[in-house]
Length: 163
Image (cartoon, rainbow, N blue to C red; front, side):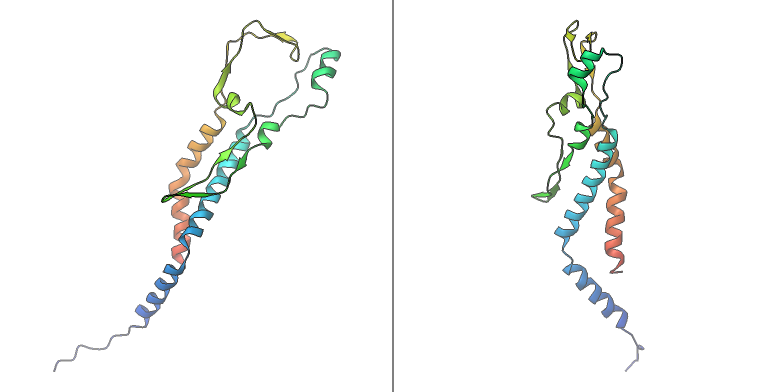
C-alpha cells in the first residue's frame, strides 16, 4: 500500500473554531451599531452645515429692544436629532430629523411677498423667493459617498479577528 505522507490539521481545526465564533456574532447588533455610526456622521455634518441666525445690525433702539432682546440663535442647529434604528425587512433605517417648524423652509427655500414690511427687520422684502440651504441634502450625499469605504472598514475589522 502506498504511503501519502503526513498531514497536520491543527490549522484547519483552528480555522473551523474561528468560523464557529463568527457564526455566533450577532449580525443584527453589528448592523445596528453600523447604522448608528453612519447616522452620527450624518448628524455631525448636518449640524456643521446648519446656519445660526444673528440679530440684524443697524436697527433702531426701539426695534432692537422689542424684537431682538435676548436673541441668541442656534435653535435650528440644536434641534437636529437621531431616531432609534428600525429594521424594516432586510434593511436598517435610521432617521435624522429636525422638528423645528421652519426647518423645511431653510432646507428647500420659500416664497415671500415682495414689498411686505417686516417690523423685526425694519425694512421691506425685495425678493419673491428665498433660496434653500439644502443642509440635509448635501450632507446626506457626502455621507452616501463615503458609505462603501466605511462599511468595508467595519466589516474588515469584524472579520480580521476571525482570519
